[in-house]
Length: 113
Length: 113
Image (cartoon, rainbow over all chains, first blue to last red):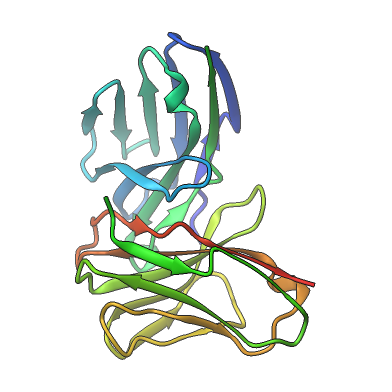
C-alpha cells in the first residue's frame, strides 16, 4: 500500500475565497495522479488525471498541478462556491502498486455563504 | 453521467447472514474494482478484475469474494457477515488503461449487528 498524504484534513472557507489543498506521495516509480470530488450522498467523480511532471490541468474554477520529482500535487479552487463543498480525494498509481489506485484520506471542504 | 449501479444502498443484517452486494455497469469497461471505506479512513482496494473470469485480491485483506462471469456485472459476497464487516463498499470501473479515470457507484453501506 502506497502512502498518500492529504492536507489539510478539513477546511472551512467563505464563499468567494480561493483555497488550495496538498497531496504528497512517494515519487519513485510514479505512473499517474488522480483527483476526485466526492459530494455527500453521491459517487466520487474524477476531476483530473495527471501523468507528466509539470502537468497543469484546469476545469472551470478548479485547477491542479503536479510535481513528480518531489512527490506532490496541489488542487486550487478559485472563488469558492457553496456547491464546491465536498471531500476531495487524491489517488496515486505506480508500478509498485500493480497500477491499482491508492487513495489518500481526502480533504473535506465546506464553503459557507 | 456514469452508468454504474450498486444495490442495495443500505443494508442492516444480523451476524452470520450471507449477503451479496451487486454492482453493474453499462459502459463496457473491462476493469472493475471494489473499494472499502471505514469512517475517517482511506478507500482501500479489496478486489479487482481486468475482465471476464479474472479476479484478484487488492491491498486490503478481505473475507469477501467476487466473481466476474459477465463484463457488466461484478458482485461481492460475504458468506457469513460479522460486525467487523460493517463498512461502506464502493464499486468502480474504468477503461482498459492504466491512466483511466474511475467511475464509481454510489456505494453500499453495510451494518452488521
